[in-house]
Length: 387
Length: 165
View (tube, each protein chain N blue to C red):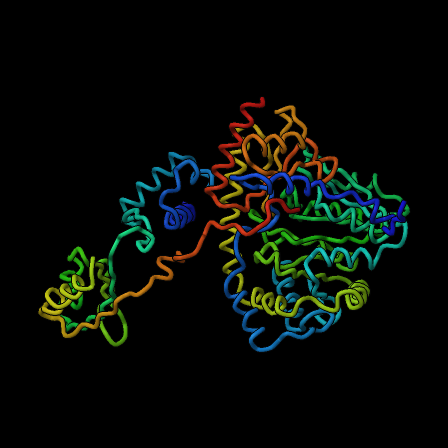
């Protein structure tokens, strides 16, 4: 028997439940996918053009570890203008390879072995594994459907132990689309302050909020010094493939993150940074246009799902709806699998985002109206058959 | 209500075939209200018609040519350019007429079956009009983009992978 060279903590990681559906869906024809966690728009042309131009000009070398100074300044200005939070471009802004890298860096910068980090499920599939890889212990809290999947201060209170160091929050949320409003953020913040926790706040969908502008938890009184805000260009500017994100936060943490980044990544891709700079300078109109389109599609899908008996709340942001499939009596997994096999519609079963996602599915509405209309027809037929 | 009307117009401008029920869900009003709103906008001449953008180069054995013609004219006291413009835009082969700033006055878009047909229209109908001083005809060789739609591109091609977190 040959020796396994794999590290224990990697071997112990469960593969993502999303993979299975990807494999299934890719083998079939005529599938409408509501399983895609990224915009259906192509990056705005001015951004692509700016990146071309930077290449033509010969900007093909490394940038500073923390990213182009101009870009860090633009990020700082943007955050200040949009969320009233202010960060020094020199020491409190780090440009990363996607928000995903920023999350990894933040966790590795603060987690000691056996530290507990709270995550609010249902949530993005990477938080738990990233905490484990950093040597910490992910402690899930189940946000409840009856609260529109909003975390409550009491739930945090219950989950906190003396080993708890940090909490990962994500609003607007993937997969539920839920947005915590100002007063909800304040309530949550008071427990966080009481227990002296750090917040890693994934705000990648913040620009994509459709009713009120989503607030940043870092703007709440007393939170700036205990919050690392993670965001990026992927969702709002339709730049997922560019892999460009950023983190802002207290100087010591950003410095520690930059140290890891410097040894393991050097810097984010230079051409992508030039594109991102153009996105922040001249991309607002494109963002507004995409937002309008997402809002209309959200309205369409939420109405259609509720009409067919899959009840869901009107999510305030991101591009996901998270309807209940309990009426059908099927598990999330069975529902998603049968829906794919019988009607050729791919959705993601809720349980892959955490236990409290069982009984729900995630539908992404970042797909053309024509496809959405057809998907809703097929789902309606499916639900009628199974109830 | 104003805001919803603009939203409705923008949706229809992009896709005239979007059905009432879909629109009603998208902009969060009832299907009846959508119908009423469309009727009102048609009455107010905000909506003038519903057309389909055709890329004729993809239609088998269809022959056709289009030209843009710069026209210089002498404006007439009292009616300016309007009278001559109306003489021009009534010809069915004329698809668009604009009054322009710059070195000529009217920009006229003409379509015909052959170059000969368009040439004949220019020499026999257009340049012989009383107040027309000169015409410069530019034949369109290839359409890349029209009314915001890029031709020759597979617009439905989704390059994303099927399921992602």
